[in-house]
Image (cartoon, rainbow, N blue to C red; front, side, top):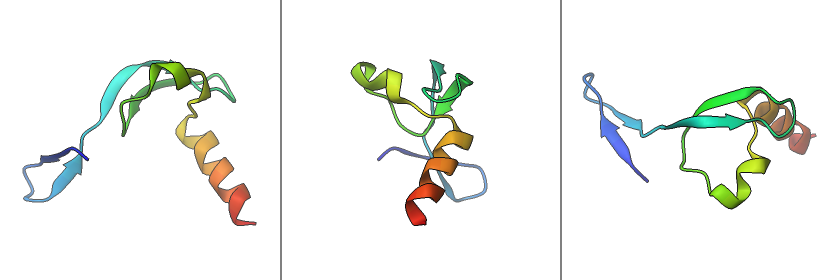
Length: 59
């Protein structure tokens, strides 16, 4: 896991920038906390769809 030290003395996870689309709603995704596997880019979810999916597993 990559971490960058920020100015506040804490650590912040490295973010990856790109141009992807959410597989569910089609929203633009420009930043992810991981480097996505190109062969699975069609399965990426935006923050809102990921949150919704996570909530549905908890029910």
